[in-house]
Length: 218
Image 1 (cartoon, rainbow, N blue to C red):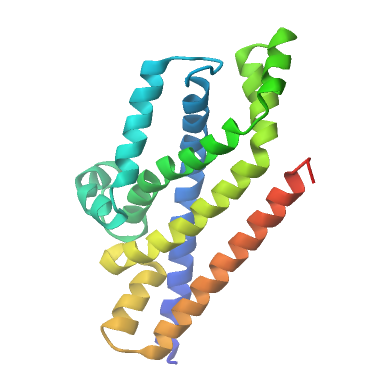
Image 2: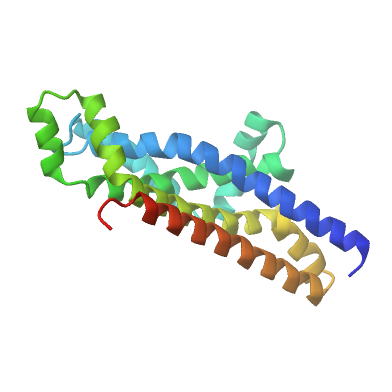
């Protein structure tokens, strides 16, 4: 493998990590509050508001229904408006985030709904406020499930970043497409696949260990 290709591989790894890192932080910052909003405003929730729940849920469902490749192309004007370009790492962060937020919100919502209703009622009977219940009951109890869900989201992001790379976003996907597919360089293709497998395995292992450590029921 030539030094130029090795440099490209290192650059691709860095670009992929930057894409995933930036998108995952924004996804966590938006997706988790969105999941809390969906749970709190649902029927029987601590902030029950059916119209808010229906409206937010509909938007989440619509965005989740669009395949990532189509979403990425459709968001090009919005991406240019936000980051000034639709190419490279910055151009991929916006569609990756838009695609991941509703995905993670739904997974986190499931974990939050699994919190024992008796704990919430006990907190309410002791006079705890709504924000106190969210911060001290819902989030701590659902933490293992949220971590596990975020791990799944990260793995999905890596898959999506490879698709984004094939249409100009950079990263390992771009390398696999330009060298592995267009130039029939099997060595590069196999190397990219191995790197992606290592990346996904590392994230999954770390996420599983953290979720297990946070599980108080073990």
